[in-house]
Image 1 (tube, rainbow, N blue to C red):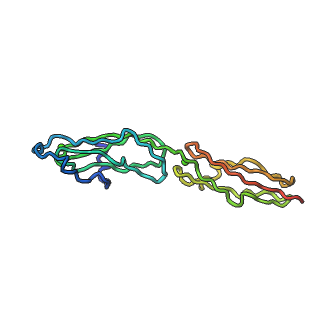
Image 2: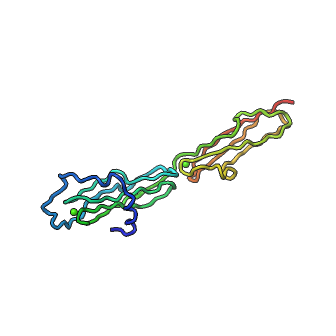
Image 3: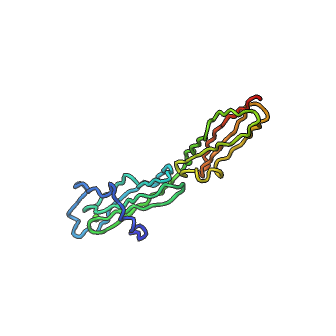
Length: 192
Ligand SMILES: [Ca+2]
Ligand SMILES: [Ca+2]
């Protein structure tokens, strides 16, 4: 048994504790039972990052000559991209244990959401200074950008209220994984 994994056993409430079907039990070798369970994990799992999310290994294959008493399959946080190895372990009714390991890859492949405050098509009276209404964003992995709006959303372009015409302002928001979303605001300076 992996001592580092022991505390996580307390939070398990998954399919792991399903009873073992009678076909898996051979009672003739159960006194005493010295054979640990057999358990198979997926070698690698890939999850899309969700900033508040958790996952378990999912469907496991396990058996024992006498009967499984416990499978640990605690949920793990998938709120940040990265790679980690997690163990699942099984215990039989005679306290023999065995474990298997899965490499978890958490990825962020989804671009953020970017929403403009105010209209995307503004009309500005001639000679009136342009007031930037701003924008906000959020990302399924990184969470909400609002508190750090100024540092995360880049705006390029400018408006000259002394020169009638239509100007494009481009907003760009990148999540920490580098996925990018852009939006454009059109500002028309009216003729005097
Ligand atoms: Ca056994
Ligand atoms: Ca993302």
